[in-house]
Structure formats: C-alpha cells, structure tokens
Image 1 (tube, rainbow, N blue to C red):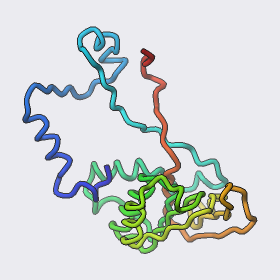
Image 2 (image 1 turned 135 degrees about the vertical axis):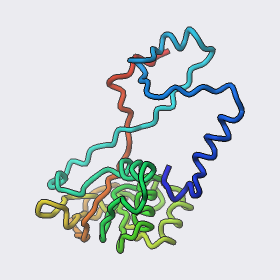
Image 3 (image 1 turned 180 degrees about the horizontal axis):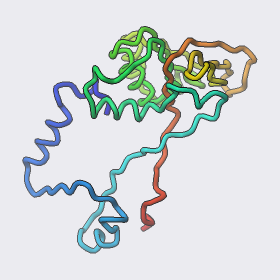
Image 4 (image 1 turned 90 degrees about the horizontal axis):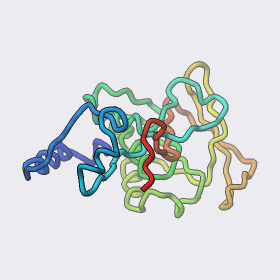
Length: 205
C-alpha cells in the first residue's frame, strides 16, 4: 500500500485493532514450505487462506534497460513503507511505465517526494487503463502528466538513464512510426506483477 494512502500510521492502527479482538496469533520469520507445511495446515485447520501477494514484476525487455535508476515500482513503494520517506531518493524527471494502480501510486509518490516532472506512460488508451478514473484524476491533480497510446521502445543514457524513448501506437497497439523521447533520471516499471512461486508447495486442491 502506497505510503500516501495510509497517513498517520493508519495501516498499523488497523493491525492493532484487529489483534485487539483476541484469538489471533502471529508467527514471524517462518516460510511456507520450509518452516510451515501446507499439508499440516490443512490437517490442523478448517480453512487455509494464502495472502502472499504478487511479488514478481514483469520484465521490461528493451535496449538500455540495465542502466542505473531503472527499477520496478513495487520495490519503490515497498521501500517507502519501510523507511523514513526523506531518505528515499527520487529523481528530478521521473517516468513511470504502466497504467494500473501501482503505476499511479509510484507516480504520485514520486511527485509528493519532490520530483519536478513526473510522466506516466501507458501503451493503450486512457479508457483502457486498469487504474480507476478516480486514481487517474488523483494523479493529474498532483501534477502527474499522463501519456497514453505510447509503447516503450528504448532506454537511453550513459551508465544511468537520461531519456526514455516511446513509440506512439493506435488503439490496436500497432506502431505508428512516430516516436518521442522524455527526459528521465529515474524510471519505474509497473507493467504487471506475477506470483513468485518456485519455492511454494503444490497449491492444487
């Protein structure tokens, strides 16, 4: 959850309230499949609910993607939750690639942290963004520029990112041949998340 959505330690207050109900035990530092076995949980409890999230971030296969300061938005948001916000570095010109809630959260957080220019770029139309209209309007109200129908083409820089190149597309994602470069000293990718389940036990059934 983005830090700006949980002011005044709201999330911690929710946890404290939940634990105050009683009958809830928290066990920290234990991993499913290693310290805790799914089969044993099934035997011991009437129901087992897994809320492990989608920690994996889809890769961005582009020339220059290995340049410094090209990172994933999930890690940026998670880092803010675990640290003093003033210690989290933010670029002057930030570009966020994606059209979902995570993309909006990263863009708004970057703006609130002091980024001068924040641009959110999505490959489809505004109507097809996964982020709700409310979230889109929130981003715009914070000064985030939203560009749609533009697909990432390359990352440019010398050691660290300096520009993001995009190619405009039509509504069927066909490239138009028209490109644009946006100044960027920090790029966040928010192009979808996946389950990191290589170490998990079989979950069928």
